[in-house]
Image (tube, rainbow, N blue to C red; front, top):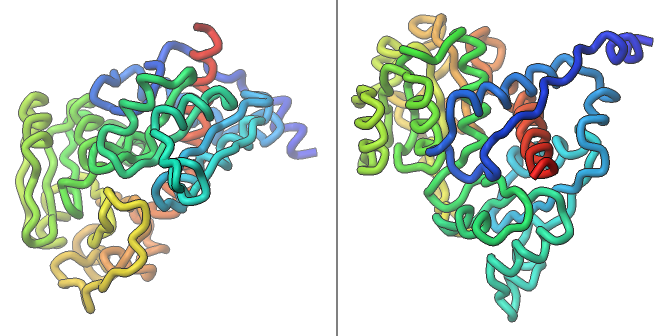
Length: 332
């Protein structure tokens, strides 16, 4: 009864309008493109499962994951099902002709699976893989992270969550915790630049640096940037904080199966409940996952920590993006 009532009262879906054909880089995305996806994602948050299933019935998502993933891959697959579609593909390249004796090229794999599916999502170890895939694909391509280049949907998601906490992204200063050479950082900076954020403060592992291309993006956008020496200093300087795993695997490897983690993360980089209750009570925090000691589980119940909210909303964000790209492709 409740579901039927929700379905009957659900507002009509926002009209699908023209996004870029692919979502492989945020460097060319406009403010209106983000707003369009977020509007549809908000609509999806308030809609019943029956209403969502009528969004793209029968759509088929092709999943090409040359690199390990949990949240990103599964949220895309769940998103496809939520909007009435399904998915095919692989999450272990060694089970395919791309990863065995034949070493089928990325371009051929994309063209093959693109002939089966309506849209593709790709995670790959090569920096230029998403652009190469988009150049030959017969259907839209979404990057789920390629090498060190970009991770567009993670940035779209986190900016959406942060905007909901801050009301606006214009003029804000965001704290970034983790290696600034990570692919997520590149997508995040593109997004912040599009919304005219004021600046970014980096809290980074010892020995890392802000890469030249990220500095250039910040300079073009006239965004300030600096570094902080501790979590306490960062919290006092920013409006919101986004965190990535403090220890990263090699994004140019399909799977990193052995790694010696640091015995204990330096307390300068830990956002624990004690620090947040003393210093950061008004600063929203998000984490891309998988989280480590930089954001302990003891923080889960704090009102300004939105780790699992981001996990949940990741399905809606990716469902909205798939729906918009599919609608645009069908009109072409």
